[in-house]
Length: 368
Image (cartoon, rainbow, N blue to C red):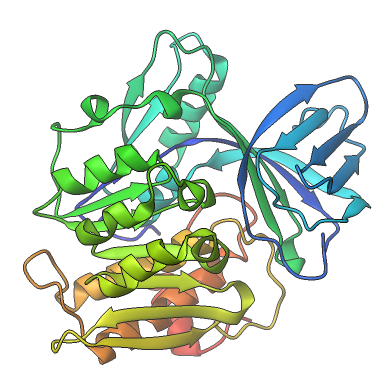
């Protein structure tokens, strides 16, 4: 059973994930950091991931699977220097991906994203996947772009690794005129698009609750820093690795702003920072929800946490007209968000728990 839809407008990517589940862990601590990349296909029976620092991850036995074979070169160092590992593949599959589709599926509302030319078979499969999950979608189609975006995701399931490497296409071509001025909603999410475009979306949504959900690529952008968006953001949602990618100036801008900050910390839990009615910063750490079984896939945990945090805060009256929240509201919302994240990491494919499922698990106090 799906959650009821919130009146939301989500600007963010939707594409196909090429998921490779490996017998982890990849390194001595979980990896949860993504990068853009470049893929050179070949006929050898393996996927080779190479970082600028020389780190390498090789996954053999992929011929005939959903994952193409070849060399995937990352734009950033997402593997630890000195790592050179060959890992066994457990399974591969194709799934709906993209932060935009995740927020749209979990919140409801309308997704605005890009697709390539109508004859692109990859774009057709993205449309089918979006429709399968019942997501209201307005596509911006580019007739001069041959192929939609896609992302390789290496995940180790119980070990907590999530390594997304994106091949960018049509979403990089989106401009403000392509997406603005068509719809309005009480809640607006800007997720993992270019920094300039996300800024334009948030400025346009001045009469809405404005959610900023950046990727690691957004946090690394020094030409158009995220700090430009601090004054037009009501909630910033990201993970600890992405927070660390920001400059000190960027972090300080958000810490000094009125925005609620939601920083997930993998298996440890999440930290929420907000301003009380006296404009003082308060913080709350919510531990990961208790569970008896290991996770299956951590890929959508961040979106599950953020969207259920938003849901519960809105239930307490958080809105464009009433932007302040109190400690009790934050603690309750963080508990439900933690339970939602705990449920989603037990799901092997794209999907999110319903509000009733989350309510039930909170009542039980443990995922068994």
